[in-house]
Image (tube, rainbow, N blue to C red; front, side, top):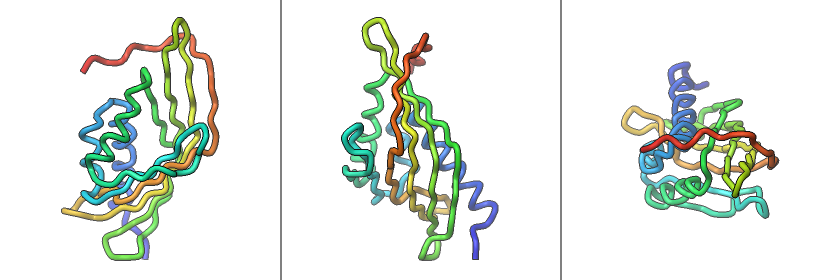
Length: 156
């Protein structure tokens, strides 16, 4: 048995909303995309590219994702999605490819730290909506590039 077209569309929407909310710095609303007992597993780049820090529950996830505020701007481009049924009814798994730009202003220069990454996800269907129950971020490569100009962050 496979996921329905509607379930696949809903899961695609979920992962794209996560990326958009990070880029829009909507850190508190990101937790609405996770189950209450969800876990977010993150690396510690550049030393560790595989997940080593585990953040459980909405508060911990919001705080972990808010670390992105340390950079001037981000852009997460979802470049691929593969979804499968999970082991239990009402669950699914996903592997999401992403390129994430992290622009930082340093004195009179702007640097783009680019992560080529994947999210290994588990999802649960709750209240007729898909939510992330586990997300592990693995970085496959990091690039650093100079940037000519950066648009200022939108005012909140």
